[in-house]
Image 1 (cartoon, helix red, strand yellow):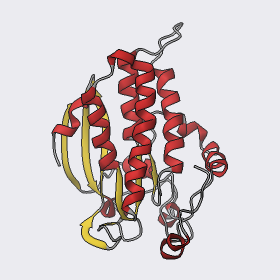
Image 2: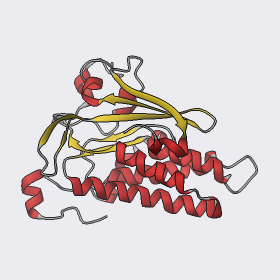
Image 3: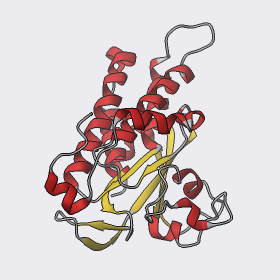
Image 4: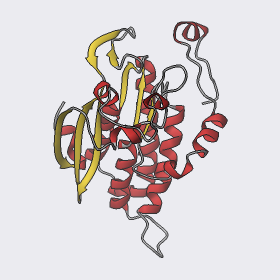
Amino acid sequence: MENQVKSRQRVTDHGEVFTADREVNAMLDLVKQETDRVDSRFLEPACGDGNFLVEILRRKLSAAKKRATPPRKRKPVPLEFEKQSVMAVASIYGVDILLDNVIACRDRLYNIWNAEYKSICGSEVNDDCREAVRYILDRNIVCGNALSLMQVDERGHDTKVPIVFSEWSFVMGTKMQRKDYRFDKLLAGEYEPATTNKNESRDEDGQLDLFSTEQILDSNDEGELLASYVTDYRSVQKHGQ
């Protein structure tokens, strides 16, 4: 997406200017080792309609194909690619204050994943898996305020509902575990970032760093666990809220 401004009014009201593809790729190249990992977690706290996140997903899906391809083989094993690609989606998080951006971001991520899924898996595609990916994106890409850490209503006003993120991980075979955490609790001192200064996980404007989620969700002190369950990865949408 090369158009960096949707309207002057949105710039005035929300400071909304999208990052161009060239800058997106230049920034992601600085952490290429992480973008090439299927399960490394990324958070974009002002994700817009997903310019950063879609490129991260493309890179992760490329890594998923490599991981799903046996030695001395040219093509990925469809079922293994399916699992790896679900993990790639599940490791991407975003927050935006505008609902239309959130919806567009979810759709862009899903469409990129689904196109690659159909290309690799062909007749072995599974509709339950597609529903599961939709559900994961609904939970991971949140309409909220990354400064107040609260969800927002359709007008972009803070509600009293905190942002909740789900941590997803494969625990055995096709079993996936989901753990839900309040985002404000994770950031209120229940974790120690790699640096000694906790404010270094934010930029100078107070926004969360794009690459801070790995430290937050992988901390030893996990914060306040709200819910947890384990189920087949194709069935995550059938459990919980």
